[in-house]
Structures are given as C-alpha cells and as structure tokens.
Amino acid sequence: MGDLVVTPELAVAGGALLLAIVALVFAIRAWRRVRRVDRMVAAAGDDGAGIVATMLEHDTQLRQLRSDLLVVHDNTQLLRRMTRETISHLGLVRFDAFQDLTGAMSFSLALLDEQGDGLVVTSISGRNDGRLYAKPIKGGRCGLSITDEERQAVEQAVSGVGLAEEEAVEESGRQARRRRRAS
Image (tube, rainbow, N blue to C red; front, side):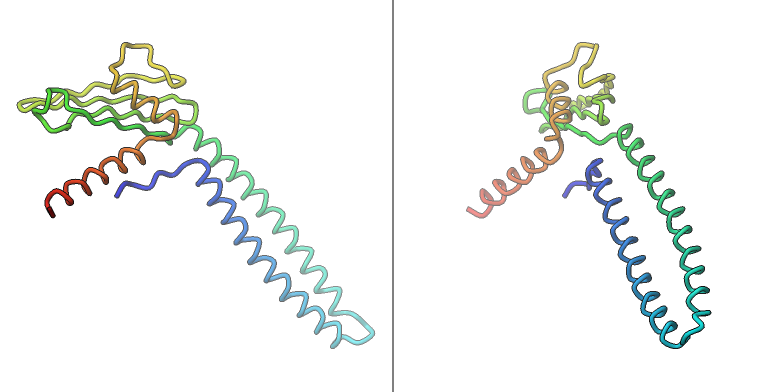
C-alpha cells in the first residue's frame, strides 16, 4: 500500500474540518452559558445585578474569540501559501533499461509542486552498477533533453495521475501472479 499523499485540497479540507469542530465547541459553550444566564436572570429578580456581570464576561469572551479567529485565519493563509510550494504532484514510471535483464528495476520519478516546478529523478539499474540522474522541471517542462520515461513521469505528475495509477498497475500484476500460481 502506498504512502498517503497530502494534496492541497486535503489540507484545506482538514483545516475546514478543524475550524468546524472549533466552531461547534464554541457553539456548545455559548449555549451552556445562555442557559446559565437564563437561570441567573430568574434568580436575580428585579435588580438584575447578575445580568450585567454576565454580559461583561460574555463581551470579554467574544473579544477573545474574535482574536482567536483572526489567528486561525492567518494560519490558514500561511498553510495555503506553503502547500503551493511543497511537492504535491508525483509521477512514477518503472522500466527495464536493459531488455529484461534487471526486472524493471529502473525508474523515473517526477516530484512537482502546484506550479509544476520541481525535478525528475531517473535511476538506471543494471546487474553490476546503477546510475542516478536528476533534471530540473519548471512549469511542467524540462529545459534539458529528457527520455520518454521521464516525460511520462512528468506528465503523470502534472495530470495528477501519478503514483495511484502505478500502484494499481502493480496490484493488478500481483493478482495476475497469484492466479498463475493458483492454477
């Protein structure tokens, strides 16, 4: 099973869920306080001294809540900026660089951010040695000459297909091998 890929959409959804939970907690607390105020009003009688103190306390708490909400808003904006600049798009193409000599142990891996900037790493594995190459990607394009496998990995990353498709291909291969062994 592959690693969890945290997309910007997932990060924003998680932040929204967190904000909803915080809002629910504050709503429950406010509801409880309203019930308490109702009881105090009933107990205070005509003078209303308990009501004034409660209203002042609520005003202080409301000001604190506004301040906390601004902090949450600023943190959400920071998270959005950070996710645009982190690696969030991956593409992986495995291949056999030496015609069935190594069992598809070579690969090209594209690692891109939201703008399509990043790099593509290619590992060529042979029986006796291995080589590793890295090429820069800007806006989903490479200024250097790239192989078909590298191009496919970049296209997967840009399109968002990436590792999920590779994992599905590997799983179908595993299932086919199990069926052959079973028959």
